[in-house]
Image (cartoon, rainbow over all chains, first blue to last red; front, side):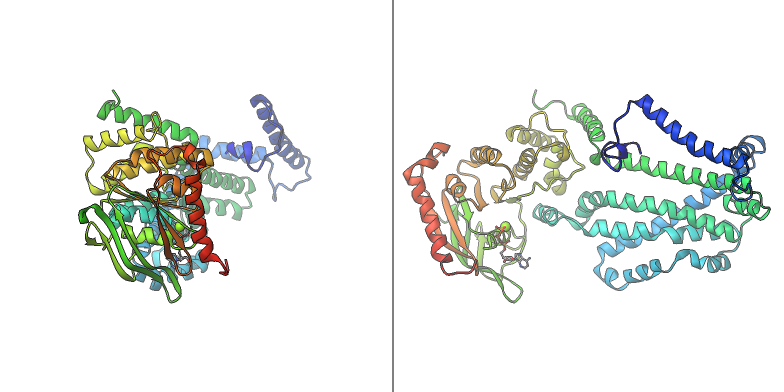
Length: 290
Length: 257
Ligand SMILES: Nc1ncnc2c1ncn2[C@@H]1O[C@H](COP(=O)(O)OP(=O)(O)OP(=O)(O)O)[C@@H](O)[C@H]1O
Ligand SMILES: [Mg+2]
């Protein structure tokens, strides 16, 4: 995330040394959370509305290290979101590939996917619960439903928007459709497909938690709701932070995949991969110039 | 002698839709080993003519023979190069050059050796494992040229291959291209907007004029080979430039541009 700073949004901010930067971050952190803490302690902020950061931190500490009650909820929620993600992405990409290959499918069937998308997925939660019950499957189903569209539309867009010259190059080389698909269409589409997966990941987590709000016996969503019903605001906020942690870990995972897979979009990675391939080539073929 | 004619068009035509006549009544014979420049203003049908010959699009009328056979689709003895390098960004130079072999399923040590040699030939020693985004525009076109050589095609169709490059790079690459395709084997058709460049490179210049796209003149260039840049200032050279200009002007007079 730090590379946003160098030439993007934060252009114009004076470059500081790493230590100065760290100090700056620490200062901002202190102002926000120190102010909040003091406000809460002095009674300017009602603890029932916004508990003090230290109370929330203590709750988190308790959940993770004293009772350990959070782990099961954490694992269940991650499991449901991940399964929903995998199913939603498989359906979305599967449909997109079919639509990219078959113009008939694209014209007569794909529009339903669009209608489906403009219908707010969250609104069908009651139906999903009715169909899939109160257990894991309804959470997974809602997660899949909420996250299928970005991979669908991005994959379709990526596969269809291929450079015209590249198409002609492959045709002039006598390429089959299958070769063109694997050697040109898929790799060209990968950046936008991965962007779709990132959106889907967030969607899957939202779907899971909303379904848990509705009805569940386990999961971070229901945990949060139980705290809230008991007006236990420290607990609710702690659960919220756990959700952020989940989002962050899934996001980091996707960023890592982006970094690994899309090596040709980063200069440092191109150098790395280039020299790896060079070593492999020389190991396999020797030096033809010699 | 008939064997020496690689490409023959007679009354060749291509129409897009109802109104656009991109190529009309094109008659030409291209001898084996020759270098043809195709020059003309934008939209006069140069790319269309090239794509007809390559088999990428179908003619709407007339005859088009390559090696005495009607053109029905892309063929392995014809290779193309475009204004853009059209490299696959996720492949290194050598992997891009090997694409034709991969598609034909002919990848082996011999193919790899040839790919390596082609990269050396186009001056990309030490850039074999660079990715396209690590290369300048000129170097990317060199990779594209190496890939074209790798196809083993002896008919090369080049559509403004260096048109997007600066003048210095373009002149250098033109000279290197001439060196590579000279000799009796490789037949080249080179599309350009630039009259001087067309004459400098070619044995014969086809001048095309628009609406409808026609080959208005075929001018033999009788300059000594190998060409060198000093020739471009000689009276003979300027004579040819004037001839091409006259053809274009004669046609364009009174025409809305
Ligand atoms: N696929 C197509 N469908 C419809 N019209 C086309 C198509 N391809 C080319 N044309 C039209 O045919 C005419 C000739 O186009 P072409 O691309 O061959 O010109 P060109 O001489 O290569 O031009 P430029 O120098 O700008 O590349 C133009 O009027 C163009 O709009
Ligand atoms: Mg053109």
